[in-house]
Image (cartoon, rainbow, N blue to C red; front, side, top):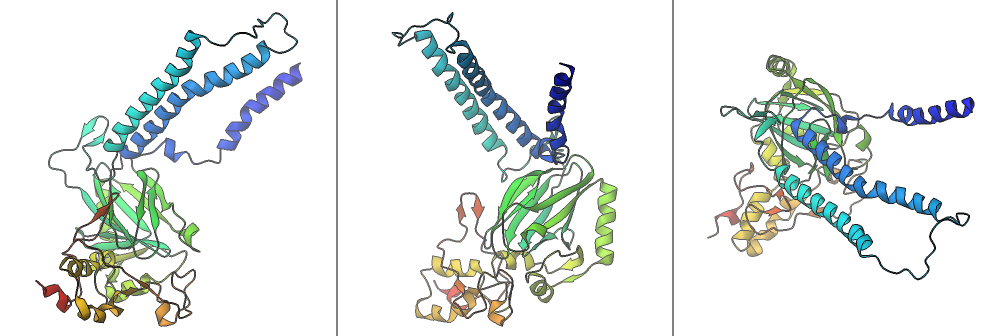
Length: 376
């Protein structure tokens, strides 16, 4: 018997040993949005366990209670209905479904990533004079590029923000779809070429947190990671000063070299960046001579360019992995074998939204507009 007791105690400790190597950041986050999402997970799980646990218990109990060897158990082969049992069987799950539906409905709107924040945490509202920090995020192959438009700086694979300051993320991609995810801060948001998604979040505790792509995007996906630093205001100011002191200039030429597929890219600082570079990336016209998507949409809105639009074909061929230049890019979207490149189809309307993903607006183009833009 003592050996059996020791063995049972060892079995009870085994789950803890398995969990020792797990990162429980999702259940112990440091940002208010992630905390609310954690609470939603806990509430939903508890509500579902209210049904799951009794069902498991009763399944085992009935198997034991009405086993063949238990002759004391009631045997009634003619039984077919019980109003009280039917009420319990249907009412309890229905109540839980209603509760889950209410919680999901409220949380879906309250935690909408496009919805500006209305609080710093559960006990503090956002002060009226607080100005959010804007960060423009670009998913490249296979690294992350961050613009701080209000500060005039940019970084690769490193992100920082002051504690208790709302952050407005604008997120896009240069090539295939990725997913921007900092578990300690908020949920994952997709990054897609030619589209801009948004995320509003706040970090409440100082620390260094892991960020990565949560959507498979090719050979270098597993190394597509970055560090997010939650700093006090003094520490953030020092970080900005370091970027400006050590960084170089991010112009179009530097960006076109940076966007080429590469793996395990080190942290890079840029003391300055072209003011229109993010909008050019969003509109898929960072490469000189390419037509911006907002220009193309304006032509479509005006009824199309007719025969004159034939001259725009080459301007709308897009391959950020430079396969058309004869470079062998790993896992390239368009192989360097001479196969057709992807043309960007015309999209009617100037400012489209589809399932929460915004198409680029009309005022973001960087290259000269073609003649068709003047059509009336």
